[in-house]
Image (cartoon, rainbow, N blue to C red; front, side, top):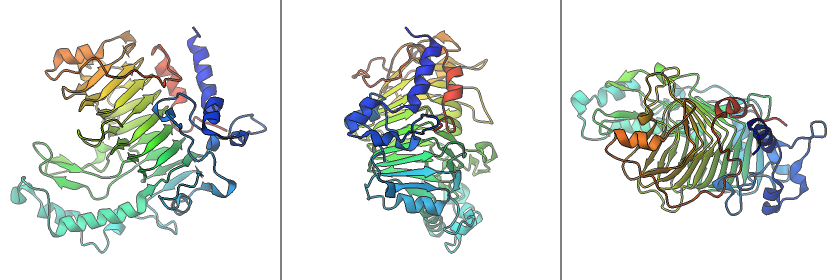
Length: 449
């Protein structure tokens, strides 16, 4: 068996070199390699998902825009340029979009900064008026807000959505240009009912909803619910999300005010995979400073037979929950590192949640549990989900997380699943060195040409 250092060397090399098997399977020629004559490394923009690298390698694999001709390779650094490069969401012509630097989604076509007040202009919405109209003391708690201010809130939210939601077409690669702090701040990438998308080497920050909706019926005391995930997959297939960073920064949840006694939550998901999305690989990303991090399945009745997702070699640090929350599908979670220490006010409730008959295999992952933390709270479920797997470590010690959870909870996690992972390229059969390894290989800004 190879040593840990040798496996890391092989894995690092693998993130740079395109799998020849994957290229052959995709019918791509030598042109996709676009070799850099000086460094001898592959152009990130033309890489495809390596063979057997998780569920996204199933069937035709995931090649994104690797077959794009020169007319459909773009380098963008502004919101307006990004919108133009994406084009119509229904245009499936292969394209590569290289993002240089940080794009601020809250700008207009001329580059002028937009604020929440700009989106609300002309709608009649004001937070003060909204709070007065739906105060539970007078409006009650039995129904959702309706009437003038709720219509105004929805109109203002729609104005913001029109500006910050970027619809990604099929056969597209979005990749950050190395060395430029590439990413999108304040925006939401949406891949809806499209196939074959690659998202790499980007930092997604400050995705914020200016106009959260009050729902007095959400829970026993109501909740403020926001829209916009940093990346949202809705009915999307063959998606590879690789070497990205997701964070609420610079506005953290600890800065959110409270109204009606509940946190005025302006953040939604980091990377959500819903509405029958399928064949997704989430690899070597960093998820940090966030609450509801990853949702798989939009409801307990989402699409049966889909929602097949592989989640490997990611770092989860300073997240509260949903790492992920999984419903219905076949989800493989391996070689991840979960640091459950409270960070910047983000205090973890749990990491992996298996519910609605989800079939989760979690193996060779590592958890850091702070002093006083409880192993029984690392998992969660509704009594119908399954978590199988082996080789998981808590503070370096082999631990049966399911047994610990079941011993403390009446709604037990099931311990058997109806499938066996086969697309497991890169699987390491020890979690011992993950904290050190992933500190240097996960997240945006690691990949280079």
